[in-house]
Each structure stands twice: as structure tokens, then as C-alpha cells.
Amino acid sequence: MTDPARDVVPALEPVRLSVRGGGRFPVRRVYCVGRNFADHAKEMGAEAPASKAARGTPVFFAKPADAVTTGDAVPYPSATQDLHHEVELVVALGADAPAGVLAVENAQALVFGYTVGLDLTRRDLQAAAKAKGLPWDVAKGFDASAPVGELVPASKIGALESRTLALEVNGERRQASTLDQLIWDVPEILHELSKLFALRAGDLVFMGTPAGVAALQPGDRCVATLDDVIALHLEITSPSV
Image 1 (cartoon, rainbow, N blue to C red):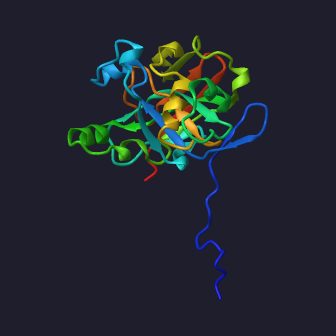
Image 2 (tube, rainbow, N blue to C red):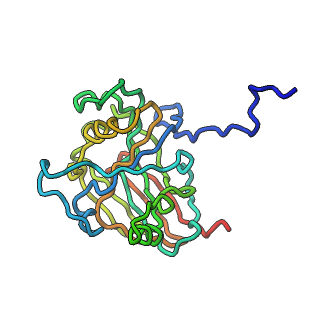
Image 3 (cartoon, one colour):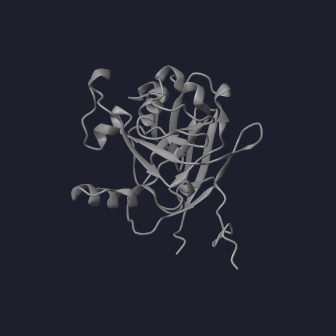
């Protein structure tokens, strides 16, 4: 007789990020923020808010947890001719949020640490879906679409506002912005997410990208940085199939 408690297929281990100073961080969920820098909103054809009062609500989407990759090579994905880079600050939660809506003033206490990542995007598939008013999950949630670097505890980063997020491709700087240019900062985003989801330890939040998104090709070498504190090095390799 089959054991009713036995898994009928092998259970997959969660993706785990290396933590500076030791240990590993198992990834539970991946939330992403769209249009969180005014300059990027404008380059994507959206209207940027003129003031905090005019911000409205953030745009959220998600990636599968196993879209996160920590290696130094990412294969060019299938079904696209227009893969784009979007460099982002990534926030890692080390504690569960209390029940209900998380207060902005309590949100920072949930943060375990930070890293940098790329929200890789099949831009042609996204544009086609947007033109038809359809969801664009396939443009964002594909395999290895969320490469991230080493996770650094928040205590070793300090205040974020003056830090510069940047991306170089083949030695040329393509994106850069200080984090005081975020439309919604980290506590505000966690507050807004808590209205929609139960935030838990192990969650990652990609905080949005500044202007300068552009195409990547096989052979391109990318370096994403947060000042000289965190660096992610990777190469876009030829398609795996």
C-alpha cells in the first residue's frame, strides 16, 4: 500500500542566497515593483507623479521563486529577440509581518538585508501583451530571469538614500541612480505589499529600476553594483537550446 504521506514527485529545494558573513537565505517569494523611478516611468511612456501626494499606488508583479539564480552565467532565454536588463535593489525579509496592514514605521524591522539583481525582461513579449491588454507574466517570470548577488545584512549597509545603484554592460555604464530617487522607499513598499499579501521571512522584493534599460545579447558581461558594497557579475550566454 502506498504511504499517503510520501511525495509522489521529488520535492524541490528552495533557492538559497549566500549571506556575507556566513549562512544562507532560502527564498520564499519574489515580489517586484514596476515604475518606481520617475525617469524609468517616463522612458516607458508612463506619466511620473509630480509629488508624493500624486503617487497613487505602486505597480506590483511577481516572479517564481525558482526564477532566482545566483550563478555567474545566464542563458539568453527562448521566445524573445529583445531581452532587456533592469538593475534593481533587492530587499530580503528576515521576519514575518504581523497580521493585518504593516505600519510604515514598523516595516524596516522586517528587513534582513539587501543585494542587487537584474529583472530580466522579454521586452518584445511584454510590448505585445500590453498592446492587447493582456497579462505579461511570460515577459517577466521565465527561467533565470532574476539573477541576484550576495546578500549583505542591513546593518552593514546603513542608510540607503545616498547609495548609488548602477549597471555596466561590457564596461559601459548604462544605468545609475541614487536611491533617494525611488518613488516609494522600502518601508512604504512593504506597507503597500502587506495590503495584498502576507509577507514572510524568505521573501525578496525587487524595488524597481532607473532609466537606461536596453537590450542584452549573448556574450554581454554585466556588473550590477550598489556603490562599492555589493557587486553582481554575470555573462549572458548563448541559448541553452
